[in-house]
Length: 376
Ligand code: ACO
Image (cartoon, rainbow, N blue to C red; front, side, top):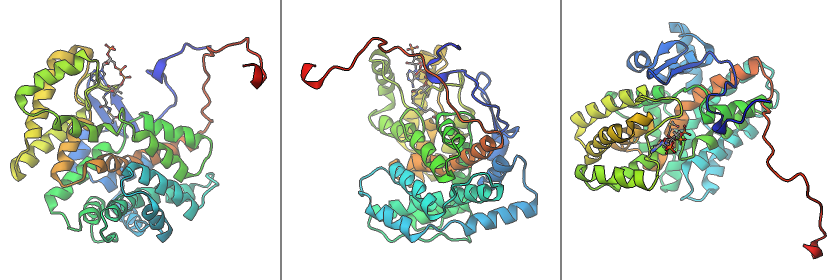
């Protein structure tokens, strides 16, 4: 029997050809292509195709993929009714998880052996999750829901459905790059969750709903909104060293720092920081950016020897806040990007499936007997 590894750190659980990560050198590649190249030159639609089907699309392939995604953006009225029935102060990640699972009832697909059905479900999930997130946000604010606009690309349409305003080119590109950066990351907790659910041959909507639940936690995607809450508790740049000392002394985790795989700065964080810098230069800065920058600097001095540096969540919230996205929508934005990676992993899992069923090291009693309730 193999040895117990807490958190499965370093355990190889599958072969995969989707995302490559070198945590010591800070390298991330999707299907072999460096993330920096994709962030500079590609679009979320193109990256989704790349992740799902293994290669960059030709022009006509991208056009028909994009047209199909646009045709799948609308969600059934019944899903809107479910969103309306939820408490307005419920977390949008919970609403997204519930609505995604519910899509499985509107588009039943209990048989996952058929490739065309699986492809279509993957596209439907990518296309419809932004509509769900935007609809819940509008419902909870008492505003009318905005229908998807097929004239807009994936990123611009999401911003439009949330804010009611069509974003300019710069904002559209920023959101597009954020989606690209968050689309895939190997065997992280939510992707692994999705693959585990998928390995039982469950329907695709349950697979993605499981992954959404996993992403919502503060140790994973949920960290991005907590970074902003944390930065808001620090009054000024001068207070950063004291804040950090207090966190380290009281053994509290600093949100947005540290990673299971990266022991240097996350390459996605480097791209996001540059984007944040440009955005604040052109649209006005926020004191939070200076505080974040100082926190990164002081943390490198005090925690760098442990390999603790900013991860993707550290700067993303600052960008989203500046774009006018509500703090509790940060993790749903992560989810509408990562769904492409989840779907790609689900399809890959099904190609050579074996149900995940690890074992445990039993540490309980071996010598207990039933005692009648009156004698306990
Ligand atoms: N702040 C302070 N110390 C930290 C941090 C942090 N953010 N992260 C790790 N450490 C320390 C731990 O206290 C521990 O120290 P010790 O050995 O002295 O006890 C050591 O580094 C190892 O930490 P673990 O929690 O065991 O590392 P693990 O690989 O299990 O966890 C994780 C990785 C969950 C990302 C962790 O770094 C963390 O909690 N970070 C904060 C939350 C966060 O930003 N999550 C987003 C991750 S990226 C993503 O999911 C998209």
